[in-house]
Image (cartoon, rainbow, N blue to C red):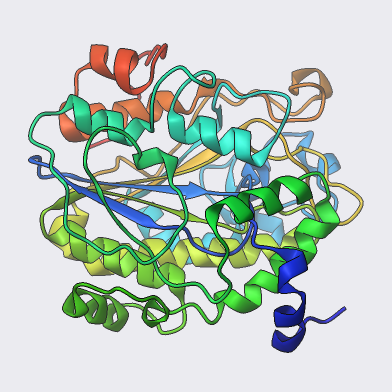
Length: 405
């Protein structure tokens, strides 16, 4: 069925607004700090498919698992290193790869296993713990409590949605673009939980919400306390693209006194018609990163590291509707002038059935918290003991992977 804006409005009460997998954006949160480097954390909500984004075409088992989704140079993807290829949706970022300002870490995961719930997985990713209830708030807020001199940055409060990543005892500021379809956070979470086990409902909801995404605008919200900042962000971003508006606003703040920005991009839950859905999501991610680069300018971009992470990967086998289902091992994207890029890091586990997790998922070979901790160590000077004990409780960071210049 083709959805129209009129039918969307009449059906919106039934469809709801999915916090876990919709194409809408969630708030950007910012914090000022005394160091000169910048960190941007992007949560890719919905479970990004690592095997379609950073395609292991050199693995002999790969083509047989991905009939219509199989990638590699022969399918139009850009070869990265003779083993991995980059999805065409990220082709605009190839200049960053060649400049050593884009990289990936394959086969990573949080300690979350087996249930494959968006909400549980995202909560654990943002809490930064090995299990629920092990620490209060989110790992970025605990970092701010660990490093002296951090203070809140005056910003905007336009959206309603929660971001656990920045919650905690340290003061931070929040801002969010307006949304064409508004629900309370409680209603959004309830709707998402009700539909989480129904991939077809997810797909229909995502299609409906894609229409609202086209109408997102900074001017949709009320209570703007700094019109000059809002107008500058709107001028720097392509019109009608909320993800770019968020990135432009974040870049503007990071050019000033802010040093940390965190926001999320949704729409990664590709149960069906993944070829089209993932291409669109990767296009938004590419625009987001390039808007950050442009908005920061050469000097600030050279001091910036961007980490894009997701709650889990997806099944290695393609399903019967041209998509993939919730999995385990995933990929982490790194970008920025401070990144030692041009590499795909991580120990590749293989795709033979005996090498898979639960005989269905990419086997994680590293904890995603480890590269995040090393980024925090290099960017802020936070000590290893505090990172392993307070920011990411119970983590063994292992050896330094050399993520930063």
